[in-house]
Image 1: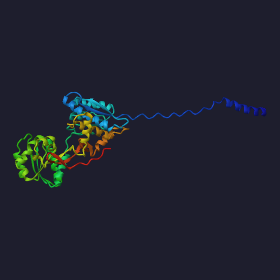
Image 2 (image 1 turned 135 degrees about the vertical axis):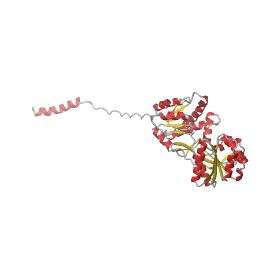
Image 3 (image 1 turned 90 degrees about the vertical axis):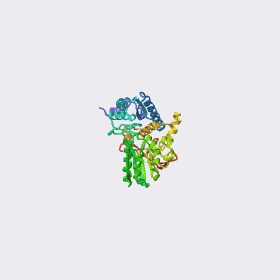
Image 4 (image 1 turned 30 degrees about the vertical axis):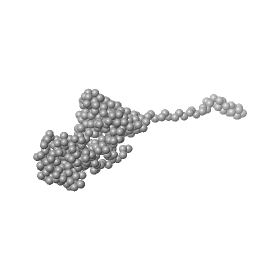
Length: 391
């Protein structure tokens, strides 16, 4: 080809190529990614009687009042507070397994209730995931071997052991035991005696009596013959009303021994109905000293009475309140997980609850004891548990 033509075609070809090329486009605007979805709303389950026995319905409603107060006050500033799902078992333990399964399918992170011991066992055994904590406000006992299963109303011997150590430490070293032959009082006497001996004290007389006894002359003579420094009486309220005057009448108290007792001695009924001359100077242990700032009873009472416009004259709302607050301790606002709640409950220490200072010991919720002296019908604290602030 003629070189001149080539030179003339090259610029023309370049022009054609340029003309046929697609026009340059402005860059597309960058669309920001959508915001992440809000974290899943945690579900807290509750299995409570809302039908069936009128008495159980009443207890269930009182517990639920406390649960709602804890969730409303404890999550008021959360952007995505947990949802409370309440299911009715009518106080029937046979329903509780199915209700637990229903809550588990709804991804509940913890379950408050049931109220009765048999129901708690039924529900806890039905779990597919044993990391799902079950916290009963009121069950009086728990079946052994149930992981992450708790009650706030299960008897424990912490206070009686503490009283035994206190007695030995304060010079009440020779102690007689006087108690009814019932499992609870027997266990309390044993816990006290073991702690007393470990601290250097001595049990000089062990005097059980038949439940229902009204006259204690023979038993108190055995106590007097042992010449103790102290007399430990872990008896229920009925027996305390009978015993307190008789300890004085039969001359045992004339020996200047110290009377030591359990929570029954500090009850409103005993302080109101038994003459102060029979209770003055008694050293007792109690899981809750309502007037003490170490526990949160007074604050809860103000919250409850201000919300419901009624006097707080029963512990059931406070038990529900504490159960819900324990669940909230381990509940993350962004990644709610069952395992976190279970872990926090297992390691609970010195938690300032409305119903006392709560801690976990070997899988059981216990209350750190208050040791008090009765003075003119009033409780004077001698030893108060140390609490730690909730996070």
